Structure formats: structure tokens, C-alpha cells
Length: 87
Image: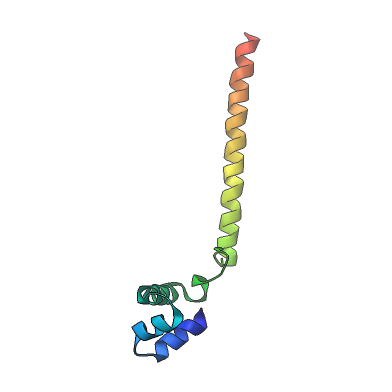
């Protein structure tokens, strides 16, 4: 993808390049905007974003938090059920 954007930068006529590639010119413009915004992380493949180590850690911690919140919710319900049956 990066090579395509480099070719795009060296060309004046985006419409002609798009025709040669069999894609819409708007797609080339979209790819260029994404590349300008995210750099190499804009086209990681397989739909998975390239994450920095900090982002990976945040993602891991958020998953752990969701798991703990689910466990907490289950335990609260269990306590409520068992406290009703004891009375």
C-alpha cells in the first residue's frame, strides 16, 4: 500500500492512475488521507491495527477490567439468591 501511495505522489493525474488500477479515484484520496493521519499503521492487513506497546497494555487491561466486572456482577447475583434462600 505504501508503494501505491508513493506512485500516487509521483503522478499528476489521479484519475488515470485509478483507471490503470481498476479502482475509483476517491479510494486513492481516502488511502492518502489515512496514510497522512496514521502513517504505516494505516494499512496493517487483516483488519488488525498495529498497536504501540502502550496501546497493547491498555487493551489488555481493559479486557481484564471487563472480565472482573462480569465476575463481580455474577457474584452479586449469587449473594442475592443465597441470602433470600437462607431466610
